[in-house]
Image (cartoon, rainbow, N blue to C red; front, side, top):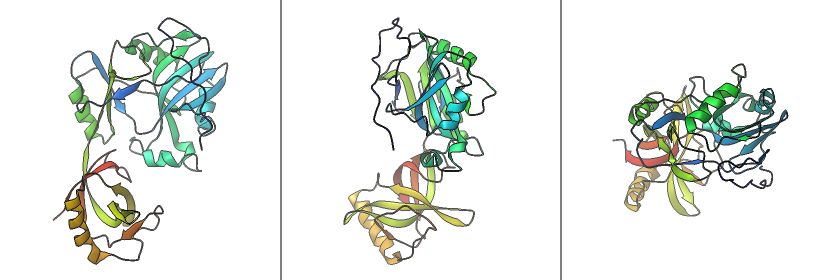
Length: 310
């Protein structure tokens, strides 16, 4: 559980230099529904993890969550490596991620950290440098901050990695992101300063994936039907794949209940599943789901119901 939130440092005007800032409110990306075009943008692969801010001060490391909570102990192995960076003081913005064997990020595995076998798989992906040795870099252009970050990182540290960027057309990078099964891209104006707001200097464009999954249960909010519990088969086993609510109209819900009620069973379809308010059904009916997070994810993220598979 998070410790009480730390007091946030004020966001100073460009040029002012507090020597050792506390947590800095992050620069957040807006979603305009499409990747931007033009040569004023650079693009990064969007990682499916937890936004995290890393502070190094005279060899002591503090890792903050996006909300400003001290998560250093949660990511102790990353903190230990960060202490080896050769700088008196750093503030780095990045993402804490658990990688699959194919190199894509696994959000659900990250949520389980720091359980044994999970915390030692966490990697910190650094994408912005805000401070170094008392200098405030937030007013400098994005690409300049990226180059300064590249120089300060130690490539021998396997738990701290630099996030590469691509200076090409946004739709091209977005199309590539779909091919490699990642969450999406983040596009950033190359000469923009770092602002602690949600603005349009940074644009996120999620990828959308269409999946066919089995219905394993009817979900309820109290006594009211609220959606479907989903499953996928992997290596002969039936795995819990999440819940879908969006896209199910009242008319669709009535049709789904009529279709599924004859298959209601008292047997749990999975070997393990979260504690849920459900009526389980035999996993016979397939549905099409649109979601984010790639086709390799065990569970769907932000799913939208499309249709029943005939």
